[in-house]
Image (cartoon, rainbow, N blue to C red):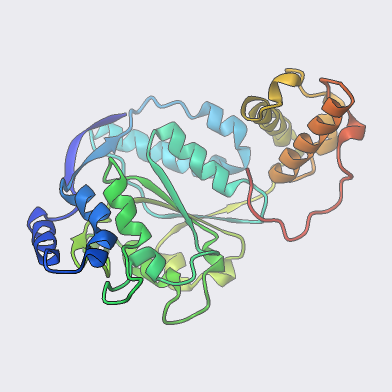
Length: 317
């Protein structure tokens, strides 16, 4: 990763003026803005450039259902690297059934590219104030997620995940999805204004990834601003290396992982091939506890939960 290019995310004079205005406000108001304004006192951020020889092979092995998405980012990265330009990409929507690993894929992609990764779920964001801030005239008025993220990020082009974009509040006036009509368009994102800060921030370099289960619950204008990928359940052949990857992830990231065999039993793997990636992970974790309880390092078929069709699945790892 290269980060030599410098990019201002705000105008220093605007930040300075806002700080001076606040000198005459109450300590309560100052405290609500102080942290973000302090971080913005230095408005300059690095712009990440990614080398053209970045290896995507491990990501492809772990997430075969996302190969088209991986192609998209790999092509973008190689092209920009050849032109000696920093990383940028149009907003992307990963749409598909619950349990396919959309959120986890986004975080692992950011890790591979070595980008700061931030996320917000629209299923829990009750209003637009959570993202764009609220006027400090209100007793609880404060800065929002977008300005706080930009201020905190070392880079001007972090990756931000908008999780469960199809589950945004149905309130027309305060629907959090309304904020993205401007943020997903580079020309308007350059002039993003947090209601509490009252200064313009340049959010045009953010790398956006959204996830959603039901495309028809996402407003058409939002869809039109994004490159949409339809993620599907991997076929059985692709699931075998994916199951191995999930098992390795459990071994390496769970405190009990070191008690398990280095490889998963073939019969167990074939028993899992028709399940979603999330269901596989949950089955392996449950199987591991049963094996450990019976003082075995090997998960066997009878350790797995019964293979019932999943309903109303949410989340991933």
